[in-house]
Amino acid sequence: MLYPISIRLTGILTRTLPVLAALSLLAGAAQAADPYPNRPVRIIVPFAAAGSGDAVTRIVAQRLTARLGQTFIVENRAGAGGAIGEAATAASTPDGYTIGFVSSGHAWIGALNPNLPFNPSRDLTPIALICSTPYVVLARNNAPFRTVQEFIAYAKANPGKASIGSAGVGTLTHLLPAWLMAETGSQWIHVPFNGTAPAMNALLGGTVDIIFDPIATSLPQIQANKAKLLATTGAMRARVLPNTPTLADLGYLARGATWFGLMAPTGVPRPIIERINQEVNAILEEPEVKQRLEALNFTIEAGSIQHFGEFIEAQTKAWAKIVKDNNIKGD
Image 1: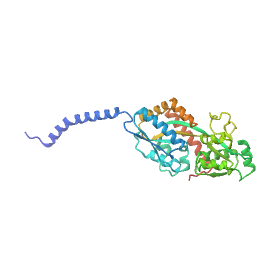
Image 2: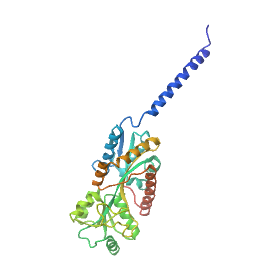
Image 3: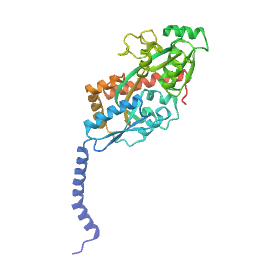
Image 4: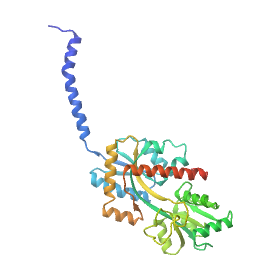
């Protein structure tokens, strides 16, 4: 007997659809059970190789590789004050196989560059805070002042004469002094250089009065008595400089530190974010990792996803005000 085509198709579909549905459920279950990660993960670093941030990234990447059984590949995408690397992270597929390494500059990148191709707060989501290090305030050896208070007095008594060198416009070495200058109502000349090394050379050569510099690169100069150590900039005294006062100890509000963390493009499944956070926190408890980070003069900053998110929000708000109040523009 011949059946109309519609009846035959209906019969076929009636028998086939349950099979297809079952196969679909099995495929979905297999995918859900597939552990993360099951292929290499890329970590985009928004600055050049060989710097302190790159060193921290590689320490974390090596341990994530060992713990999770998949290679975590470090990819340096430097330029535009970190904007190029962060934009690449924000634009990547939100599947957990591309994550980004960020520094303290993430907190003010949007304020300095309102025309970014991405929104730092909306397009990136926190994973884990890793570590931080304060800066030191250094003066040239032949300066006519020995303390931060004396430098402020010198700047007020010599308008247009006091100078500060920085690693470039929009860096922490620029923004921190700008905050202190605004807070104290003093004025000094900002001399931007292309990196911390040229700024240090200018200080040692006596062509600028002070610089704010990372502890790691300053210690050799301090220990060799090539520059005067005036203060540190963290919330607490530096572990390696316990007798040096912080700016807060001296009564100033200005403070800050370089920090590093991991972020992901918004939309990565929460279980993957939580997994990476847990692994990073575990890594930061490893004695060898602690030793390596402390050797680089970093303080470990392990914590929850929520803590990192609140930290970034507070940092972004504070630095946006500093940028606006001082009319600082990106390069």
